Length: 113
Length: 112
Image (cartoon, rainbow over all chains, first blue to last red; front, side):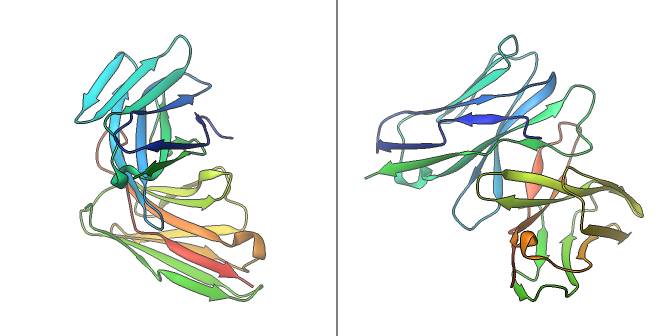
């Protein structure tokens, strides 16, 4: 069963605006990861946040994690056309992870020029 | 780039035929994974391997088998392909204990 659920399913914004995507999950986690997938390509790892962290930054990406609400958000600032892609959250369960990640269904982000 | 290749990249086959997809890695990682990706479902784990000859089932393993006789190769076999197995198949590896995954380019399989 799906662990992560992204919201919204699709998002269209103007270039230069900020894009926020949310992820909810169901069970206790060791870490939560965000991936990007360009059309027709494999997934690319973006950022990882551990369960004892609340916020993490990487370039134009900002990830927050609220373990009490079992939710995370991914903020992309100053969006660019090249950010058009699908974004997935994935979780590693507490004490595990060797048996694979559990992915959400993704948010499809479109950046309008 | 984690040195992961998949072959073939595209395949069209008929219902009932056997199909084998290959994942090859060049970095000697212990853990390898097969996922399928379908619209509305995201990625779902089919099988994974934690070493040579060590494999286990994932969420959607019915109709699939795997083999790993060498560290670098992880094979996914559809013994008798069905139309419901039309999908894009991704192989992945993990490098460390955080379980960040690195994906191959995918194989698009169409079963007619």
